[in-house]
Image (cartoon, rainbow, N blue to C red; front, side):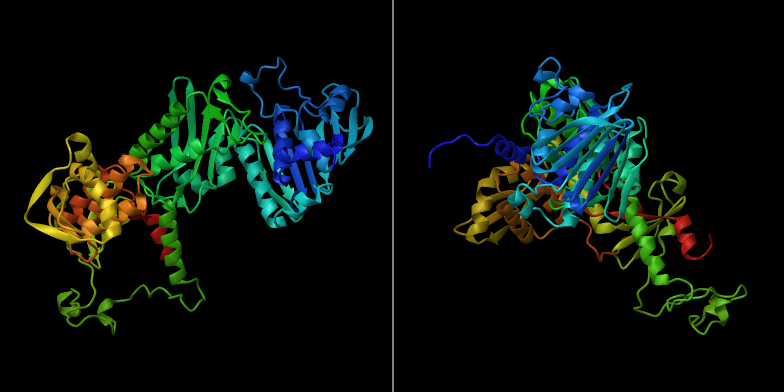
Length: 598
């Protein structure tokens, strides 16, 4: 077949695939144009997930007749007046959005410039221009794209379900709305309005709450930092408020939503000490910098960026998040408490249900109850049968070093099932998982020792021989020097075995064989991909887990209160090394609601 020049309309359709990958891509480009036009209100409507219709209406500056005629031409734009790509201050700039959409859909534009006597309208059907005419459109711009990809059935074939495409549009509009709280955003689909966010002025936190939810705002802390002209602001979730994927991580550079590996890695690095590898925080972070130090012209979709100094930006994000986490991670997400209250309420049951139990009469007397323990009437004390499960309620007999009103985690009152500590606070109660809490405390001690002068060692009176299979030995042998720096001295002991001569002093009596096996498994899984520092942190976390107060161990009142006091002064004490909460706090007002007292 001879070489021939492609038809211009076919060329436009091929090029459009780089910009308009799916309906959400078209929505993104049109909403960005509206924002660049200074719109204070943007209304988006879609049908059939965007296949049937995409409509974007704004109250921006609009276009006159000559601008409208050029707007649908490829690489025609008003956003780079001097042709300088190093100072891009708008969301769009490539001049590809409208012609790309027009190449794969039936496009209609109605617009009216400010102070113009009337508006203008133009229609393009799959790249074929139908002419420009006068219009009575009142203000701003309305753009409608119908039958998206009808001219490119191959692309239409590979779109996802209506529900999935609608969800993608929702995500795109939310991301743009979060970066521009000064504008009102609404989105509707076939079955009605999906959301309507009123304008919030400069209150970005309020807009974040509208888009992600007020629960996130209640379980997030503020992030604010600046380094060498690069500014970072926004909200990040407490470690105990996390998700199974990174979809609720919103990052912006100069108001532009981006999905960049630099930020994904920085966020994960900041939370590594607080979350399990399969859990992700929720964040909304805004980076503002001189446009000259960031390249937004990396990809037609403009979702990726390149910084002149990526190390500076990554260090800023990691450092700011780590510092904020160190200051705020004593808090546990109140969503855990609400879940506990909801669970208790369900078990109690609503009035009229089979689970509902009416309150006792006002003159009820325990001594007259057929269930009163034997001898209670005479002694006025409960005599629990031997072996019955019972809380150890003697903790209150020991005086606190810190008054209850001044202690955030309160005073220990009981230990349930030798696993959970019940503490009374000024306005509620706290339930502590003793193993998870102590695991975090030991981990932080080990890290502090390593950073100061190395982990203190204790020589074993009788060295322990640990037999390992070939895979474990291959993972463990190269790390002997690293482990020695952490206080764990190992040496080869014949084929398939190691000798434990020294262990971290803080661990005390532990099962050294099991500890070495777990560390070998960890190193085999972790390899060198995460770097030396992360490998060492993983080993310390494993050591901490082995030494922690185990579930099932009865604690005395002084031990329980000492644990509470140490939690209050330890960074990250609200969650264990695996990201699970170490305590749940229930407010007295919520408890009283359970019993109908409020």
